[in-house]
Image (cartoon, rainbow, N blue to C red; front, side):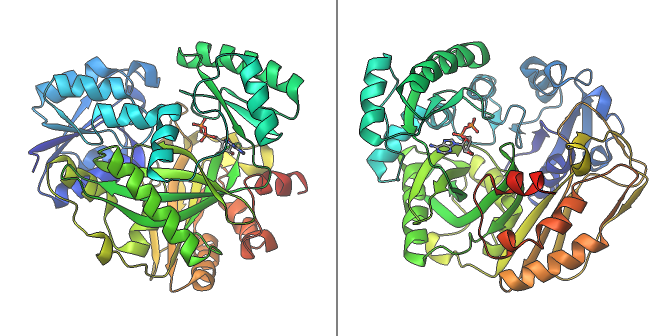
Length: 448
Ligand code: ADP
């Protein structure tokens, strides 16, 4: 096992990683920016190192300062958490070169799955369902027009190295397709330094369903079933639950197994998530693979009993996976609500500043992952998520009742948060009856 792990992140995930590390007997070093000087999570670290001013580009994204901190503090591993450098294959490689273990996949596996075209090819080979579309990069618009005609409009043009919803264009006819290829290529060059684009079928009313996977360096790869993350706003997830409701068991098992095969084929070690869109007939199409621990991992931890963050550290240290596929059992239903410091009644305006009221719910089947306490000042520099409320019940109905009670008990102030949105959202027939697609929250908000 590692002696000392450097946590290259902040907030609730820094806390989550340090707790898992301590459980494994590892010491922790936490890096922080000047804006996070008073971050309550730093109290749990055995040592802390300031790596620069508030803006991420000057601190949490600085390879040189993070590596220097790891070397000075003699950390033998770095956990990147999610966001920041978590999916940066170059940083991963630099860690390798400096003989510091990056807690996550090898740089090669990360790069192979991070390239959406290469990932789609590998998925095809392993039987993971992908969208019909171009086999690889679009070389000229003529070729794209033939493919689009063949699969039928609407289609979507996507950047091979894209992320965050950028470098994507929807096209309903050939004219839009030609314009879309030109502008997506331009945007991809500017944003990602690589203009490669591809074309695939665009699904109109889809649910977002993803499969949590884990792999190790001994050739093992398993899945921990699925999650539904259909409730989104501007491609940002708001609510996640697992197992994904209203999916036939045989369909679910097939997709989960194919996701594990993909991870195995990539010789993947660590936590990964295969994201899919699912249509009304329960047809699945892979979107992309996230090569890191995700925000919504607690949902899966609760329904499978597997500590995903701890497992990510164990496999990075060379241990085999702590659980075999046949021992993974589904237990009940879990729902996670992202509590963001944003005002849902004022176009989700960020609410930085001091939190004076922070009353967290508790009791049976309630988990709150947060770094906030009364008196904490939310810096304006980072993601607005201040807490995750996760509830568990024997079934979805019980989890929903528990969510209703916990959301009512949770009090924050003076700034607005998304708590009020969640209280209303769980009462909608759409959420209660799983009558959802990825744009349902936006349509519902417009009518409010
Ligand atoms: P990014 O890496 O930028 O997040 P994704 O491939 O995950 O890109 O796609 C982001 C979002 O775009 C998806 O969550 C979905 O809402 C939409 N999207 C992407 N591909 C399709 C598709 N083929 N059909 C319908 N929607 C899509």
